[in-house]
Length: 307
Image (cartoon, rainbow, N blue to C red; front, side, top):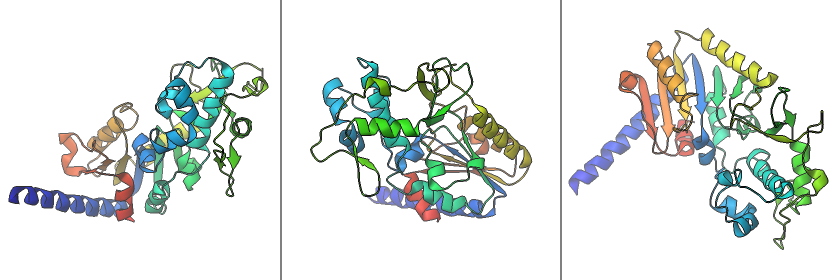
């Protein structure tokens, strides 16, 4: 019993020490590079299973046996009218509404007076919705708010907000007093949209798809390349300075975009510090252990302690 109590106290003290260290690093760093993965949005309440899925996709679950929002994006729907009805909901509830919890706003509060830049694999636009400077953001994997042509050969993307709103209305969703679409009181929704509402390319009338990185047809448009160049320039201008590489909710699916580069840049710069906030996956290489802060816990709860 005493051993367990002692272990808990050590873990609690270590957590407090790590929080204090991270707060000090944020305050003193010359620059903060934020690398964000899906765990950040999960902490903000943008979950793909459970209550949100059951509320907005219950009919798709009953008819097709879909059990979460993510897998629904790959389901072989019987026709285009049904497939795009799904995607309208998928996009809207993960792109055009604020996250249920203010985690992104708390993150902005933490770094707003710092020289910062964000690189993220998230495609839900929550950084901009929370007020982050668009010129300091690099969305590497696409954006739920954009369409592209099927083959991507024209190198262009197309805003889908107007289409999404029409497709939501066509399914029977109604706006609440804040203008947010909700399921009507009788629970009746259509699982398809009219054929003439199936989205097409505004340039040539060809079929479109989501601007999400799934294969080599993914379009890296002008905005993507501007953001990539801005990120590279930010890293170059801060070489050799006291940089805090702050990794938030990055898993093992795409480590080559955020996690591995953050480790490598920390190793290459004796003044750099690496911080990893992740629930169940907070770790670092032994080579940079003395300049790393790894906090295993809910990101939102941790950010609340830092502000």
